[in-house]
Image (cartoon, rainbow, N blue to C red; front, side, top):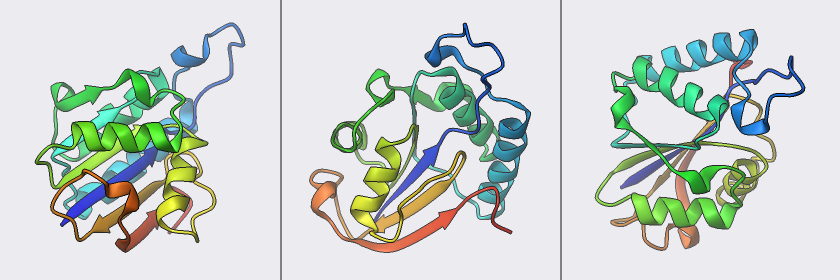
Length: 162
């Protein structure tokens, strides 16, 4: 069994229009939302074997907050350059390459790629708002070829859900 968690970064700040896109920090709402989602993951005892993040500040900060809530350390986060502005095909390639023996992999990245990948596995998922998490479970022994697998379990959570 393999479980994939797709996490869209929390809400970022647009306060300074001169800040490069990769360097935009989380805004106050983003910080509140990631705390909420981290608490939910902790209460469910979610602890990925591998946590991968885009290098963008907003994604890496989201990953750091979630890691702390799940009992992981900053050094446990693998920053993957290719996750920044990745297409669904690129996201799948990263999962297959970095998944290894891990049973549970969490990916913190960006739209539209994340929503498109979630939609690939679960047609009912058409939008991932900021800080949303999609959990996909597969009856698979390997991450190789996971793009062609059918998700046996799909769960969606976002900060606005009670």
